Structures are given as structure tokens and as C-alpha cells.
Length: 195
Image 1 (cartoon, rainbow, N blue to C red):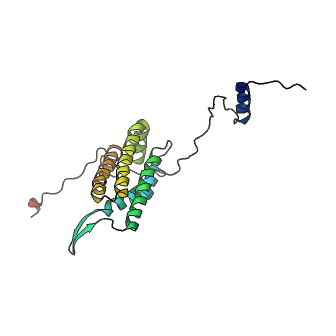
Image 2 (image 1 turned 90 degrees about the vertical axis):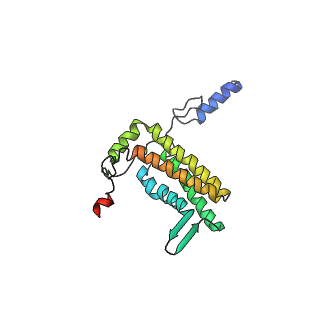
Image 3 (image 1 turned 180 degrees about the vertical axis):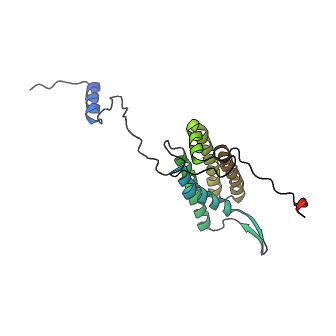
């Protein structure tokens, strides 16, 4: 039995073909589904990861004035800094989850909460028409949280406070654009006319 001599290129092509999944081309392009599946909705991510982590970070630094006096709130112990860092990690990774393709707004439809506030169906349509804009808001939040993470790693309370204000702005900008773009807030009554 004669065995034909193959050039290195021919041998590589044979091996690639033999080892490739069905339908894969020799060039290395393998048609496949992404290894992830967007199961949770944007609302789920907000309720379970983003809001709790952001609230924890916002609540970690500040001055609280009560009848009992003034409380200067900031992380002081290793345990407090570590817990704060874990919340920042949750938040920064949640921004990756927000930009995953195929993620829906909510598992159950919700109505508008008032004039100028979008329903879940309206939000879904808005995101479908310009997903890049929504993704840009998520990426802007990511950049702010990375600054918070840096402040945490340097135990820089002032930088953490500044980044917390920037995070509030990033969150509000997205909410105004995608949730309540034309919200009508009733005017406060004129207290002089009430008296």
C-alpha cells in the first residue's frame, strides 16, 4: 500500500477539516451560537443587581444630619472597603449584562406610571429602534463605576464621593432618555395661597 506524501499545508487542511465541527470552514470560521443566553430582563438586572449595588455605594459616603447630630459616613475598616468593592464589581459587570443582545425590558408588561412615562412595550420599541444609544448609556455607567472601583482600591473617599455623583448623573440620563423622556411633574402648590 502506497501512502502519498502530503505537503505541510495539505496536511494542515486535512487535520483542520477532520477536527472541525460539521459545517465549519477550513479558514477557522465556526458558525455557532453565542455561549451565553440573556435570561434576566433589564428590569430584573435593575432590581437584583444594579439598584442594590448602586444604593449601597451611594450610601457608603456622605454627611447625614439628623436630630441626633451629624454623621460623617465613609468606609473605615478593611471589611467595609471589601464589601464596597464587591458591590462595585457587581455593578461594573452588570453593565456587560445590559449590553448583551437579546435582553428584553421586562418579563411582564407594565403600564406607564404617568404622563410622559413609557410603558414596558414603549421602552422595548425605543430600545429596538436605537439599541446603540441604550448601549452607550450602559457603557457610560461602566466608565463611572470603573472610577469608583479605582477610588475604592486607593481608599480615596473624596474620589468615591465624586464618582458617586457622576454615577447618579449616568443613571438619570439613561432613565430620562429611555423610561420617562417626557415626564410631567406636577407643580408644587403655592404655599402662600394655602395660608
